[in-house]
Length: 216
Image 1 (cartoon, rainbow, N blue to C red):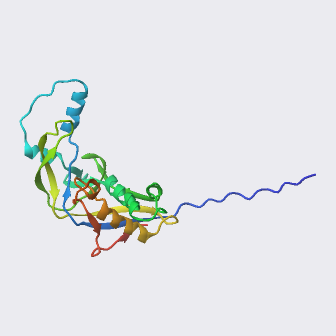
Image 2 (tube, helix red, strand yellow):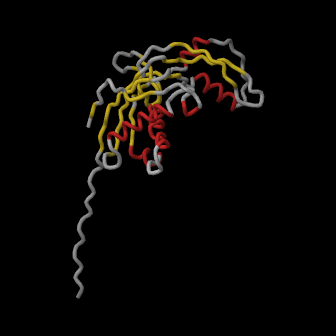
Image 3 (cartoon, one colour):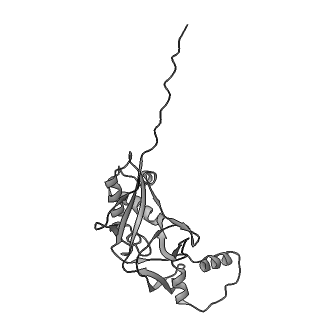
């Protein structure tokens, strides 16, 4: 008769994480260009075959529509923001600056960022602190003609923000996370005309003069 011993129960511990508040400071102006509701409506009407009516250009309205906005649920005050996904993409994309042992795919699973979600915008935003101004640029449109057009967008000459970052402590160290945030801000950036898109705008670095807060 064969006696089968009871197998030891599988023990799986919870994944260890740490959450940081990382202050960053812009090292070049940030150019913001939200896809306005008007632009979405015009795209839908074009896809539906509706005739496009020529409207009088309103630079101020285009400028205001290009912001990402955060609405304070208590006071109703509106603040400026930028998609948190852009900062995560810059951070994980910084893997390209290191050896092949660091992959973007792995970093996406090790590092997470959280933003603010309000009724003002249907996505998580990082609050941008700074004074914006209107920027007028000549851009080339797509298509064979490559015709020129004007764009009116917000620019933050000086800006700062705070990133809420959660990472898996058994997979990556705190210093590595901070190094990746720095590298992403230097070589990839966020917003229009960033280094990733052959520009020199939207760069940033971890603010060495401010304190990094550990939440958990």
